[in-house]
Image (cartoon, rainbow, N blue to C red; front, side, top):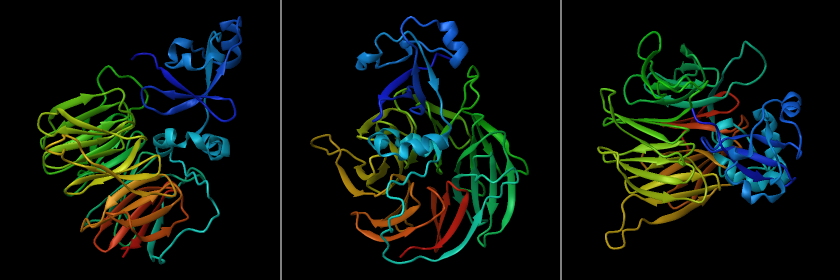
Length: 413
């Protein structure tokens, strides 16, 4: 694999953040060497040595012009979470929105303020993922609901099935972290950070498709979105790859754009696949794989869903946008409208069963229901971390959180 390259960003304290040019994820802070310093002595004291040719936008920072090399001062996710909560770092949040969701941060600049709430919604039941290894919480990253119950995957590489009464009935263990669940039949497919997609219809998970190429030897391979419809199975990763399989799980086509980082949003209709990423939303012809258009947005796309006429997406600038699916016949342009501005960064968005409204969950634990014009219908504040997944099923709304809680709510009115 090629050597990693980075974008530099300056924070409010004079430090430099390193953002991966491959995934868009923040890898840590830059720690520079002094001019004339020995690389051998520097590496002995501080670890690995990186050279300025790895920095794409170094010319924008003249104070680093004489830096001979540097190292990456990495931080654990919880340390970066505390760092981004500080006032000086708030200007970086639009840039780091997709990374915040990747890391499972629950950032709340207005922590302690009372939530806006039109009525209180009853929690029917809740289930917390047990952790026999310690007291830390295990985030639930995705959710799929069927007649059998609620399937959810965790950061520990597990898939658990809970029935509609909140009782555990099945459990699967996979080799690495599990991120995505998608299906339209009896059981979902699940993605794993070993680069494979697994089938859960048997007693043991069966690897059915490898997203990672044969010459990719990285420790983990992040598949961020999987979408199954009666027409196709679509898979997107953190590195700008999109692959579409037919119903026999045979590859139909693939696309790769290195500048399309962190593809959290992936939906399709009978004719088009829609991919949300760091630059906006791209529309691909479902049969040929040709990119038909790209809707540019000012901030990374974190979540979304489709109506008959619009692509509704939530972005890290806290706005919910409606993007017209088809271009105007005369101008060739597509209309974009701002539907709503959230108080917290939206992590997940799903339409109601009748498609007359949608639900959005944010990193503060708030769930809001809005109509398609952006009018707030209901709001509820949960105290269990960031909302990681939302699913409507019958008269219930199911939510999972970054603190490892599955919550069953009565359907919002």
